[in-house]
Length: 269
Image (cartoon, rainbow, N blue to C red; front, side):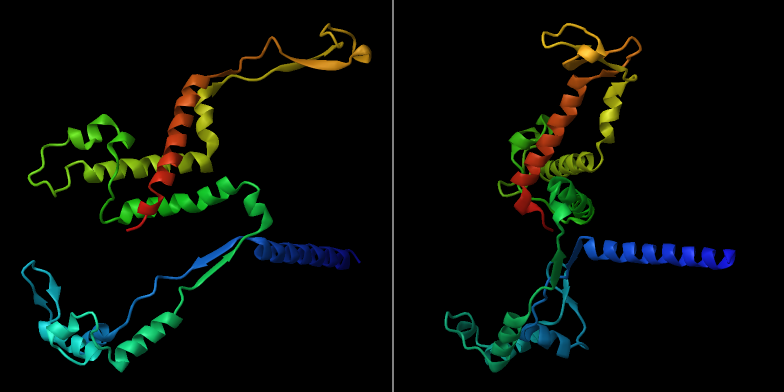
């Protein structure tokens, strides 16, 4: 009998665990975004058909397929290799090019996004959990940087603080440093949003709060005659908070969010 009850109890616990796990799987936010589409046209087909052609280096020491492979792609795309015709506004299009364009119009980037109601209870926190790792990856894998206004960076990173440019069209020596600094500030802001333990560095001591019974005029009375209770600090209350220091960090966090909004459309690589 004891063994049977134990087995029944274990089975019940297992069923509850399975049911709970199923609910958690159903209710969890799910985000799946597939890779960007790659255009496949006549030039790409020519490149694939001529897989055996060895790459050659151009004047910039960059490797690519021989020029005749590109010419072959032009023919597959327009039915001619005449540059005047190909570069004209009404350049002819082969059936192959039209087929590739039709296929491209039917292709969609795969995505699946499931949002639950509780995901918007604190939407700022929910988004911060997604944004932070993306910012870190962008910073680690980026290959360049956008224009960043001098007003958004410290004095030493401004374009006016960089050595004189050799040519007017050159980027200054601080160009990429400014973008690195902006990304650092964004990452700092979203890191603090995800984990507010940074506030503890500005707090010390222990709370001791005492609730004293008072009448409507604020005079202390017995509990039975109390209309209100006034919170006061007890004799052993040692709690202190550096609100000024905390405000400095909060200002930096807000600036990180401001930069995120301002340079949102620059968040690509």
